[in-house]
Image (cartoon, rainbow, N blue to C red; front, side):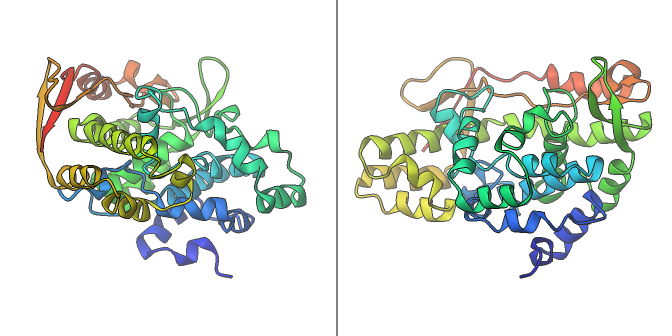
Length: 343
């Protein structure tokens, strides 16, 4: 069987090679499991990728993201348990990913599905057999948050946060090329932070500034009115289909996003399918500060993602007026309270 990396495009192979010069072959058995392969049909861009008028040209799956996070962790730690925990960190992602957090009333933290990670792994005979073979306990890999290199609180830098920033700036919006990613990545190493905990940080202030300048171009995209409306809309459609018993919650974990869209478009309730098809081609989005009860209007209070990484001389925000301006520009960016779409 070919290694997972050998099945990727040339650009992705080069990107993965930057993240880890040596590919940890033990990952392939875990990647090949049914639970991980399912993630190949789920896009990182929570529903917005499928809209007719979108700004995203490329498909980047949750599986690709998960492998890339694992490679970053392996590069900096060469720790098998941490690397596998990173690989599994999104294993509980349903179709349309964080749209389901919106359905569950968690637009700000977007963490409601993480608690299912344990059950998915525990109930997988394939994964449990591999863990037994590798002498790894379930508790050592079900929560990647116990490993600060893998994940930590915003605005610190972690493998997960670093990867989706690189990924968005290369695969979706052209903020940087592979050469720039390599330049930035080669400047990163592990530093003890203010709390004495290990954290990914930069050797030089100049490269940290370069990273923040690129990343700050991405942050506003993640709180765009269109993305927020899309996530709420998918959540609303899925809830309607739940309530009408046209789908079950398990369907979100059994179908790819493409297959799930087919279920919506062919729903027996034509009001659902017609409304969905109208939404997918509509692009008349209006931002406002008052709720419009006669429109599909949503609250724009969502998760704000940004990074204030460590350098050898402290947090970049504290030592660089350039980076401080970029970070403050995003943090102080006005976001209207609501937005709605005319269909």
